[in-house]
Length: 509
Image 1 (cartoon, one colour):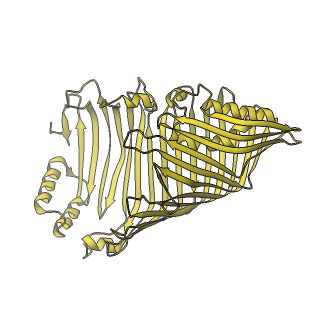
Image 2 (cartoon, one colour):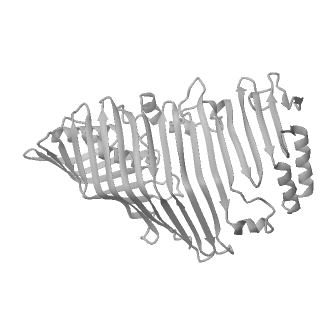
Image 3 (cartoon, one colour):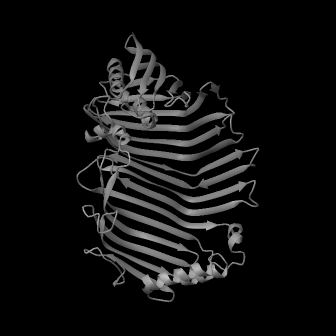
């Protein structure tokens, strides 16, 4: 099994190119030797020729190779010629070629599949790479006028794709970064970086499908800040084993204004276009023995969609769209924290969309807001990061839920407001009280304001049949009581120790 998967391959390479040469006593041979040792410990096979010219070290024909056991293929990257040049102040300059090709070959998993071969070129303009400090605390500074990643070739089976059929270009300008590294058995790194502008251009078209998809766009002021620890253990170790030895990282990305334009040219079904923009975005990612977490969002989102079979554009906007996710990744005897959240703040649709189902304006067209904030405790019953374990799980349950906290669930739309909160624990040793699930214990508090008036309007507009509305009113009468104010309903749902379910104190199970 390879030490890192294909998904993490392109994450690992920039870190190693930017930071592994730094961890060394600042002489050319030691810098290159440590860089090579590090790459080999990551599972790469390193091929190169070394030659000295005075104090300068030239390493030519540098190639990195790795078998991708999980995908049944291999990866190789040519770094060309590297030069390690000592400076008078004890620093070492590392000069790299302007273009470095990467080749990925993926073998077919079944007889019906075809082999895939891909070549990507990583290029730099006016790069400057400098290591300074000491072997115990080394600082690395990097800058380039631009960097780019370009698809230079794609072949699936015997079919070779042209640029009109398969195109990928990613260009960043105004690039700078700083990396500080310490440690030997376990390496600690702290990184920060910035890209003034990032632009992308993608084209996808298969010979069997007449549709052609083209995506262009970009984002300004991309800033990264992160830190992590990397244990130097056997190259064959899986991610779960590395995490138990201390593998962890915590990083955040922020970005300024961004825009995406997707065009679909389809001779059979007509043209399609999606344009989106935002004034800012953020993404946080952390992984370690405590779990995996994501936290991200965008601000001031504008979306417009036009299609051949639509009489007018579909347009909507949001002040903010955000999400968060936290989950355990290692098997544990004790329950671990999890969380899930979604926010759609001040969602607004164009009047043309409103006019489809509310042409007379009976519904309030105020911005809508949805908030979901859940957390709790769960026990993972298998190693999520070990592919050999996950491949043999079959239909087994991946884990157990032990507690659920409904911190907030709220929806404000069309003049009605719904809110829910509460906490429930689950006894996983009791699967009989509530058949098929662990016994719940706790309570949920619910409230609805303006719901009856909204239901009446939906019936009057013909959007909700009268019999369905009658059923909804009966359910409200059974499970709710009047709240404070007009058209206000509340409900408290309790799960008792004896296995009963109460609604506002009344037994319903």
